[in-house]
Image (cartoon, rainbow, N blue to C red; front, side, top):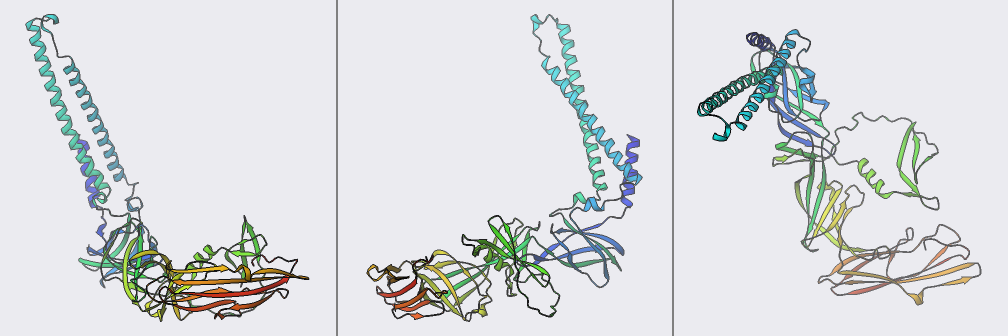
Length: 542
C-alpha cells in the first residue's frame, strides 16, 4: 500500500505540472433570428496570465457554422486560433502514450481492484453474520446441552459476531478512503473538466496570447441553423365601421442546445447565406425551348436547359386528355420559398426567454390600426357564399411579410387567411372570412334556357338569375361577379343576350356589379347567353 500511495503522489505531481486550459462560461446576450438560421452573440470574461494560453469557452450552441465565428478581443490580447468542438475531452486530452499517464491509469486499475476485494470481503462477513443469527437458538432440555456448554456457546456467538462487525467497519473505512483517492485521480486525469458546469456540448477552444496578466472581456458571435422564425398575423375587427387592427407576430423556434435566457431578440427577414457576388451580364441569345419530360409514376418533372444549366421546374401531372395540370399546392410552397422578401428587421424591446425545446414561442412585434374600406365579395358561379374583404391603401408603408393570419371578427374566431403584400395592385385586399348574413343565390331559369338543333349546329341558351340579400342591420357594399364563356374556336360562337347593369370585360368574360344593399334589401340580376357549335361535337366544360 505504501508503494501504491507513493506511485499516486508521483502521478499527481506530474499532472499538476501540466499546463491546464482556462475554462470560462459564455453568456448569451442577443440573438438575430432569420427565416432559416440565427446569429448568436455572446460575451465571456477570462483571467489571462502573461504569454500564450488555451481558453475553453463553454455554453456554446451544439450546432455552429464554424466559418461564421467572429471574435473581438482587447487590443493587448491576440487570438491566435479558434476551434469549435462538441467533444473536448476526446479531441484535446493529454498524450495517452506518455509513460507517466500510463502509470496513472495503472494506479486507477489497482485502486479499482482493491475496492472490489474489499467489497467481496464485506459480502462474506455479512453472510457469516446471517449464518450465526440463523443458528443461535437453543432449546434448553431438548438441546442436549448442559449449563456449562450453553454458556460457552453464548460467549462464542457474542465474541464472533462482534469481531465480524468490527471487521466490516474497518473494510468500509478502507473502501471510502480508496473511493476518495479514485475520485481525485480521475478528476486530475481529466483536467478537472468533470467539475465544470455543462449546459451544452459545444465549446470554443482559443489559443490566446496576452502581453500581461489581465482580465479580458471577449465578445464573439456565430451562425447556427437550429433556429428560425416565421411571421403571422391576427386581424381583428369589431365591425365594418371601425379600422382594422393588425397584430404583427412572430413564431420563434430553436434547438441550439442552449436556453436563451433574458436575451435581446431581433427578427430579420434577411437570408444570411445569400450569394454575395455581384451579378455580371453576358450576351443574351434567344433559342427554342425543347423540354425533356421525364415520367415519374403518374406525374413528370419538366427540365430545360438555360445557359447550359439544367433547370427543374415545378412538379407536373397530366389529366386524361394529356393536358398539363399544375399541382397548385406544390407551386404555392415553391413560390413561397423562392420569392424575394423585404429585408425588414424587428428589434424587440423586451428581453425574452426562448427554451431549446423545438417548440414555437409567440412574440408580439407590433400592432397597427389599418384604415380599411370593407366590401363584400361573391362569385356564386363557383361559391354560393359571400366574403367580407378589407381593402387597404398604401400598404407598402407597413413592411408586411407574406404570412398566414388568424381572423377575429366581432370577437369571434372565424378562420384563417393569407396576407401577400408582394403584389402590384394599388390596394391590398384581405379576406376576412364568410358572412352568412349576406345571402347569395344563383339559379337557372328553365323557361329561358334550352337547346335547339339547326342543320349542322347545336344552339344552347343559358339564363340565370342571381339574387343577393342583406340580412344585416347596416348597409353594405358588395362586389358581385359572374362570367360569360369565351371561345377560342371559330366554330364556337357566343352571343350575350342579357347582362343586367353589369360591367362586362370582353377579354376575360368577367361580369362585375357594384351593389349597395340597405338592411333587409334584396336585389336580382339576370345574365343570359347563347352558345352555338357543331352538333357532332361535345363541349366538355359548358
